[in-house]
Length: 427
Image (tube, rainbow, N blue to C red; front, side, top):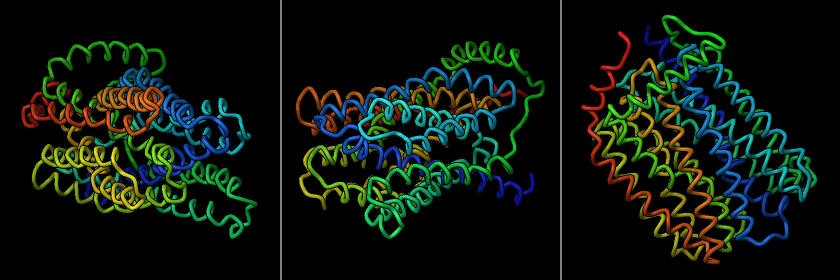
């Protein structure tokens, strides 16, 4: 493939991170938790609303847990990764826009619509991640994966900065108040997500199986392949060990992403300050993700991951003790420095440990474990907060996941894993 064409596909692929990160930042991490407590669930105890929010995140993740591996196998057999990607993206975009219509006090409907949006977001990511093997070879995967996360932080951060300005100064934008501004922000995220998904659809090509299956044959072949992969993944010892490691530490990463704003509100910080902290994370994350990609190429992907996990342990412990908003800002900066790096290096390392012609299926397992972790993490944090009456204990429990994930990562031999994966590739 000519290099110019390859670079065009790389940028088009990475722009989807720019597109959907608006949902992760403006909706998932920022305005939905705030709006849920203050508009859709006003008057409810803080601990109870934290539990309800954690449950919404967990239920949406559970759907992806069951769907991702099978749909990934079907997509590989039928050559339809892009179609599945855009089907889930359409669901996410539509549901995000519908949040604008949910009236005050309707917390059950808000949870349902948000869960649909989260299913669309997470489901689309399974097939987006699997296309990494289409646009980058094993040698470039660290950098290309990091480029995606980097553009995600920048794009999500730019729209988030505009959205925060709208909420703080609604009259400047011709809006009645902050409530109307937040509702309009949900619509803007849906439009942003849709528009910047177009380059991937137009310019990222998908390798087609030699004998693609269609319709019921694709479903049947996908199901048979899924059963076979369950057997084979036990033979891919290094890949299996990495998946266990990833399952453990990404639980902590995802829980912090989804519940940080809620945690800050629970311990008494003002919403404006928390939104500023989230903005800091986004803009620090833009260059940091690129740096981590280069770091992975320089010192090795595993060492880069160890650095990131050590930083997360320190951040989580500090989160238990923090009392001042300036400490929250410093923690936001620290998270921004490592969050994108851990995510990017995890994705690129895994892409090297799997058969490239079955990427969607194997990334289905990858995202299944990631989302299964997200089933446990937010619910655990909310449950501990209710049980103890203190949200600080909830955040502290996440430390064990980073430690256990790092311990398993010690046994992942990348060269051995690559060699085993290549033996399973179709000639």
